Length: 374
Image (cartoon, rainbow, N blue to C red; front, side):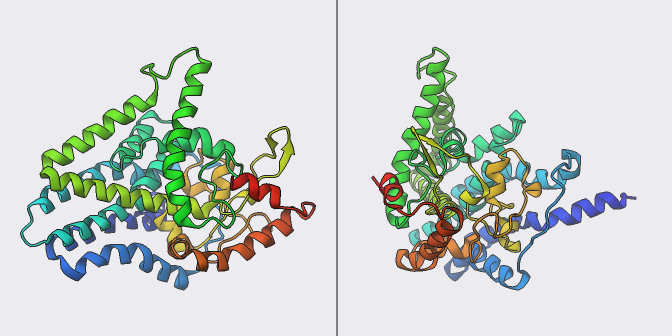
């Protein structure tokens, strides 16, 4: 008989396993084509938004001192996802490349949905894994990122974003009044260079050149090259194109989230190029229950910046007096971000309220705006 405490741990973790539902939805779309191809992205965006509306907020905080033994069922979903995604992605490439029941447009529609999976779930889980101390988990994170050709995200996120968030040196801190369609091409370019330069600087401090094989970019290139080769072997030229398309969609999903997480929030400049320490106030938060199930508590973003290696079930919620709150969960907010006038209407007033609340002594924000929008 299974001990009752194991059953309770399993039951508590199960909502976070809803990501597995994406697999049969993708297969359903691949087999049937047509309108069924819309089921998967609608499930990711609207189903969880509707659940948020019905289920409301989760303001409960788990004991942050719980050890990994109590978190096994939570940890397991992030560990098993990499091989599941790998099998789904390349199985789909093998099937769809020559599928007689799918037109060319339907094939790309199918892989739009696959990109929603590899971005919404895959990159998000890689983010959880890259922050852990266990080398096997970090490898799984690298594996997931190689499937979307965005391996440098690990270097950029760990060495640049967490250190410089809310300052001009962080490319993925969205600037006040900067629309997503301007933000997206900017970060695609800047993040790669900031990640490479961060690794190059680390090697230089050790007396090594960037060409030293300890530079993780060599691992990134090998893993990404292997993914491209496998996509071609599994599906030929069309398989390669489908792989590239899902990678682009996944990166778009990631950068939409990056855009909303810190939009318009800046750390106070202390002079001589120094900024105040990162505080809960420097991230937008959302306590919406269902979208936090989908995104494994990524929306508790302030606590993630406070304790980057804290596993997702232990991330703490902050009240509105401690950290700024989004009016809706990420699924709705990312859709709003695609319409810059709507986004500014919803968020700019909240940024101004945030400035008045936390930095009433700053009466002229023009220098900050200019620094973040060179």
